[in-house]
Length: 341
Image (cartoon, rainbow, N blue to C red):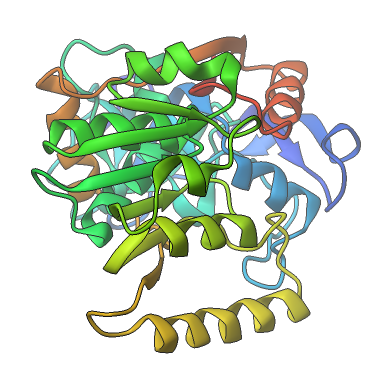
């Protein structure tokens, strides 16, 4: 039993319908707090991070894939303290410091949220709640990209969008694996990407990326941006049998019936065209968050090989959440934006 039971209702930032961030987010004084069910852990949220997917879901761009029931408390990445555990949970206790990507259920913008125990991990040793909240979605995605790209010692890797949330972590993880890494970013972020460990940095705005890298010179391209242009570059620079690993869902991040069908047919065609040792393989990444994967991330963090860069910290208030989501939506965020209590 918790030493300080959570109240039955709470203050929470909630989404009331689909639409623009400024129009559909509100502060609720009576958002319900339910006891954790079997296999669940109740967490008192101390920090939460924003990701591009948050804004797309709020605007309704992904409603054909993930529908929401309103009111809904957004933000998936969170860190906090365990206040209660449900039946069958033996891996966490009241008072534990934890973090997670709470997948479909969100709740980072509330005070208390229930999280499936299988999604949680203890915060890395020596890390505070702010940094821990910035890790789950982006770092698990980056690690999945390396796994799917089969990045090992000596692999030659290009990371497109190397200064962003996923990108800056992918650069570090690839270098930690012993890969040779080229980061692609804007000129203003060149030194930041170098500081993450990139061997070379290419300005995406001033140089033809394909020509700068050379034909058939890389094993893996990790695309954190999206769009047909990235695939064109990748086909040119990848060696036969190379892998184009992309986290993008569509060119503008918006999934409609038409774009979903188009994306599926495009991926199928690219897989067929790229199959075999002479082709270039198109590898879409869809994150399956888990506590086991997050613990692998934590091991990299605790070893000193990987760290999350928090570029801005805002208060976990209604205005703070709106500002963070709008800033994230510009596509120019370096590292992560985190909200804290």
